Structure formats: structure tokens, C-alpha cells
Image (cartoon, rainbow, N blue to C red; front, side, top):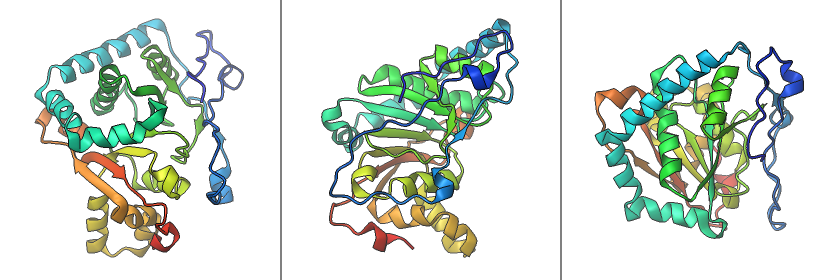
Length: 280
């Protein structure tokens, strides 16, 4: 993956000419594993450019001020201190150390961040990711995608050190290297897409996920008994037996909308486990 996305110039650019396509990393896969089978509709990479390409320095400056204010608010909160303490407990830090392994770095992929210009919860979620990046040297490059991102938001994200993808992966990034997927409050289908694209023990073991509770999805489906809904979440349900899920600790009302129901998901799949049999 390229280190950053090229951002268009200010003078009403042609997005198709100015945007650089940021594609997933290509790494060597172990030959003794079958290829992950992806349906034709999943193979199609959809090139993306922002629908809102109107921007100017004043708009970008105001947005940067909003984000910096959110970072300061979060950094000075008891929520951040508690979150940081939890990350450094052996129960969680050991998972990260094992996942990083010999690579020494773990990239972060942020899916579904929403509009950081229009709403505070996405700004707080982004602020948490930025603070983690600043705190832990083992977090490598940070890549971001949401189809609602505007050109102004893209430029501010780039200034903050993030790369904005210009391919809509629909969550189907293969974790060929250790990867933290930062996905609070994403749609269930996006989590399911991620799992399906990595439905192999060596790939799943490269993943650490911060997002909605898989256990909560399972409990909801056990009550509603909706077969079509269950089918759209079948990988979430099937992976439950292989996931260690840890909710983040309690937090104040200031951060409830941004982080409620979120937690860490750590995968531990034995090479001899038959994931095909685990599918519903």
C-alpha cells in the first residue's frame, strides 16, 4: 500500500486525473494454503473519488481546528486514561505483541469513519486512532476510507498523517501483514465482508479488530430469528468460537455516542481448525 493518497489541487481538479489509486499490499502467501475464494462481485474494485470536491483553505482550517479540539478533549479525559491503561494490561498488550511479531509494526485501517466535518462522534473516533498512533511506536501507517469523505476532509486527514484510500474495498482487505482494523459502529455487513475475505487461519490471526460486539450480534439474532439477517452475518456468527472479545471500560456521557458497544476482538485460530466446517 502506498504511504499516502495523492490529494487533488485546489483549482477545481478533475478527480479522475488527480487521485492516485491506493491498492492493498501484495505479499507472498504461504503455498500450503488454498487461495481464499472471493465471489466475482467481491473482486471488483470500485474506484472512488469524493462527491464533494468543493474546498478552500478556510474550510480545511476550520475542520482542522475542530479535530484538534476533539483530540485535546479526548486526551485530557478520564476515558482516554482508562482506555490507555486497559491497552497496557497484559491481557491486551500480549495480543498486540503476538500479532505484531517479527514485522515490528502493525498497520491501521479505518473503515466507515463517517463525516468528520459534520459530526463529533466520527471526530472523536478519529482522535482516538490518532492518539493511539502517537502513543505506540508499533502502529505503522494509518489508512482511512468512507464513501462520504469530502475533498476537504481528505486533505485534512492527509495533513494528520493518514492515507485516504481511493478504492472502495467494501471492507474486503486481506490481512497479509499484521493489521488493526479500526471500525467502531460500522454496519454488520462490513465486518462480515472483512471476515469472508480473510477466511483462513493465517490471515485471521493477523487481525486485531476494534469495533462492534460480535457477541451482541449473536444475541440479537438468537432473539429475532431473522434468516436473511443471519445469512448476511454468517461469518460473524461462525467466528465467535475463535474470538476473544474484550469490551472497553465504562466511559462518560461525552463519549457514549462515539464508542458505546465497541470493544477489541482478538483471533486465535489453530492451523488444524476447519473453518469451512465452522461456516453456518
